[in-house]
Amino acid sequence: MKRVVPILTVILVWSSAYPLIKIALEYVSPIVLAIIRLLVGGIILAIYGKGIIYGKKELIGGLINVGAFMLFLNFGVMYSENPALSATLIYTQPIFLILLSAIFLRRRASVLQILGTIIAISGAIYSAGITGFGLGSIISIIGGLVWAIGTLYYQVFLYSRDIVKLNSFMALISSIFLLPFTPFNYYFKLSLIGISVAVLIGVTAQAVGFIAWFSSIKTLGPFLSSSLSLLVPALSYVFSYVILGIVPTIQQLLGSAIVLAGIFLTIMAGKVRKPTG
Image 1 (cartoon, rainbow, N blue to C red):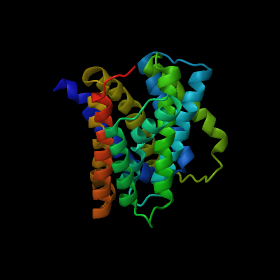
Image 2: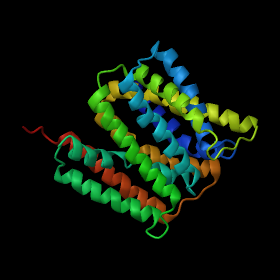
Image 3: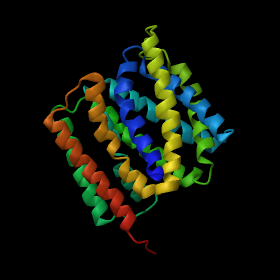
């Protein structure tokens, strides 16, 4: 039972983060929220990891994998009617990672990975609606692409780094980098609720979530952890209903299920595929 506690923690804090972000955005603008989240989470990770790792490659990785991704995440949730749909579209990251790996690293995709990609894309189009593919959906999918680019960069240049110290630096440096952009779409309503929720997101989603994720990778391995993490967008629908009272449409639920099935197929294909060469 102890082995699954970390991944259960990840699922709970990350899935509940999407409706909490929606609440926080009623009081603070997306960039301000990102700065608060990254600053709080980065400090906690630095304390937990007993320091940071920094450098030029780490800086680039941080701006892509944390700074840019966080902006697309927040704006995606902001412009989505249901934050859970945004979560589902952001979690198309493995699909983009397969495509980018094939293009830049010349890693051939297997038949199952190609099939999973087609299924996931079909589900994304269906869940958002061909004619109702709004700004929130577009931003969220771009967020998935940015996440994949950052992951690929990490695999190539930063894989050997201490993951906790690396993430603490990337969060902190991204919060500083975002400061000059705060005037963009700026608003800040002084509210105890808004500030508390923003700080809570930094503590849970950015700090506790990543610490639990790293622990899960060690105890369960990357394959099982990645597979179980697909429960995050699924549970986001539950938390969005409980916290915000947002009832998902049948189209959103069915489309999201198709997306997650396709993503799971690509993850499974990566696990069972034998090395070539």
